[in-house]
Amino acid sequence: MHPTKAGRSASRIHAAVLLAAVVAVTLVSPAFAHEGAGVAGGFASGFKHPILGWDHVAAMVAVGLWGAFLGAPGIWLLPIVFPLVMALGGGLGIAGLPLPGVEVGIAASAVVLGIMIALGARPPLWVAAIIVGAFAIFHGHAHGTELPAAADALAYAIGFVLGTGLLHLVGITLGVATRWEAGKVAVRAAGGAIAIAGLAFLTGMA
Amino acid sequence: MIRGFVFVVVLALNSPAFAHAPIKGIGVFYNGLLHPLFVPAHLLLLFGLGLLLGQHAPGMSRFGWFAFVLALWTGLLVGQVFGISVSAIFLLIGALTAGLVVTLGRPIPGMAAAAITGLAGVGIGVDSMPEPLTRKETWLTLAGTGLGAVLILSYVGGIAAWLRQPWQRIGIRVAGSWTAASALLVLALALVGPKASG
Image (cartoon, rainbow over all chains, first blue to last red):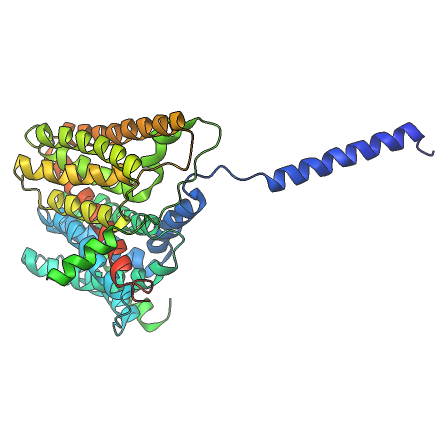
């Protein structure tokens, strides 16, 4: 059955309308504020950076767990010290100052912090702060070298500081279990697991 | 020391690095109202200032809040009339200062808080110039920004003042350290990063 003249005409009109709609949708400018895609993209990539790297995750959770194990004021001092020193390390990375063994330092942070938790170590607070701060430099340097390439640097920085802080919070929340004897055993076991994971990162097995 | 200060001042007086594209379809007033939410440097600074004022309210907020409102509206006016602006570096230094003071958790004199919030208010005000619009639309946008920034500061400050439990006070200090860390990183990028060093 051949289409009628009127039918062909209607089809052409439909095709023209469809084409016009596609062109209009393609050419219309998006209503992003402040290049929202850049801000949102920068925040998302910064937020994902510490969360998607298992070596970062292990170390950040360990900071929170150890803080909880140390009790007040360690529970809040370590998560405050870490982002500030991490930012200093990030500054080193941004400035292009080389820091030898960054990846080794990150993996070692999981090993050392995991061992501290597994042993239930309670050193003086300033010693704990120095240990955590020293490793924060390595984590910050790794983040900092990626900052210049971020879509929106400030949104990236806010995203990854927030991501890091939330991982600390996960550790602190899990660490609440140290109120109970069985919980202490569980947290120390988690520390042992983090140390083993750190060893795997260190030796390249993971 | 003086050369370093001059360097920072010169950087601070550069043109802002942010695009100011409006959201289509919501009107100029609401665009102005939402403006501080969409500029990360403004939002970070307002968040830090809110924590600062709320952490030691009412002693600090008594001076600081009014100083901010006055300075913000002055900044909006001065920026529009004289066409001057500040760069994000000035705002980030403010966010870093506010974040560090919150992290330390020690009260500072009310006049010092007023000075910090006042400088920050001027900075946000002059950095909030809208795209070229008609005269009426420009003033509507600025009115929206003036209200939006004050609302954000008041909400953050109010919530921070409302949180009185010891663990909540610690949470405020942690949030302060996050604010300072974020600002410090981007300041490093601006001052010693690849673009800064050419």
